[in-house]
Amino acid sequence: MQPRRYAIGYGIAALVLFLTEVVIGTWLNDWHFVRAYLGDVLVIPLIYCLIRIFTNKLPRTMPLIVFGIGVIAEISQYCKLYAILGFEKHSLPAIILGTGFSWWDMVCYAAGAVLICLVEWLIFSHIGKRNETA
Image (tube, rainbow, N blue to C red; front, side, top):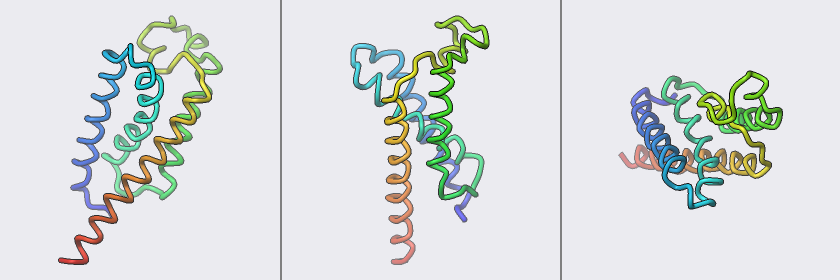
């Protein structure tokens, strides 16, 4: 089981990812690739880190579950959930829910899930090797 001390690391990672998302969303409008794709890749690790702050026990399939959350959000955008709920397109709730469906967003969410797996593998395989040499 993962010690609770990792919650601080996940909290810091979530904060860094959130601030990165804010920078991308507010100041990088002219950088289409970054705004359109990198933000969508990073939102999946952000959600994952937020979940990891509060729990030690997660299934190994958690990156897939978080990817599924992204897909559900994208489907809600396809169905224009913000309009069904009565929100204006540029209102804060509509921005949070999202207003534009894209298949590429789902590809980015998948890349975010793969990124989670890679980073977790790198971190925890390194910790395991360090503990073996101690």
